[in-house]
Length: 230
Ligand SMILES: [Zn+2]
Image (cartoon, rainbow, N blue to C red; front, side, top):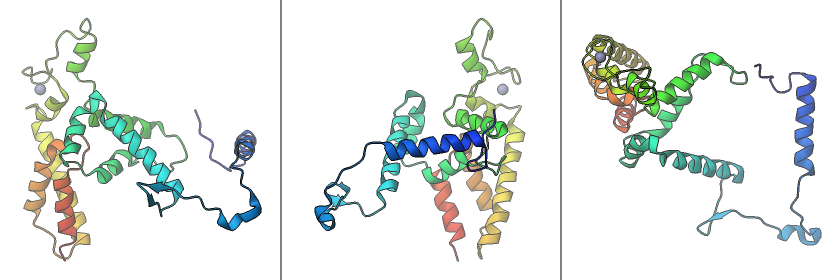
């Protein structure tokens, strides 16, 4: 499957563009009597207050909010819903993390690698990674038991992947690397950067959120404090 860039001179793609434009122009219109055009004023209001922002942006944001709230009401998003209610998630940073493309800078083409990464991030996010616990529930005939094959002690759930004794040192190493990376980055921005131990503590304390790709409000507000400390 290849995605064609817009206006790249592809004949059929240009034809599709033309047809789409024609459909917009030929669609139903708002008919106004032009005898007193100066008196015509169309206003969008909310609770009787005039919306001063662009109506297009406003409608776009309303639909985003609607989709977001529909998602939060899903059963699979129960945990995310609770964390949101308690104001534990910094949503703008979290959305950025979820939609960030590390593998491909060109957003107008389809990258399977990027798609694969994003699907993985979303599975982590809603705790639907195909662990043995999940597989055992779906196909008990194929996956006889949910026990972790590495430690043979506990069931392999998404939480267990991070807490399994076999993975423990890798996980701690990852968190420490992330803390050092963050420390280096903050040093470039802030005149009075915090001590590495403070960053290390912050990263390690946020580990449950990190495992789901969430940015916690505590983590975010601490970062803001570090960066704006001067
Ligand atoms: Zn294990």
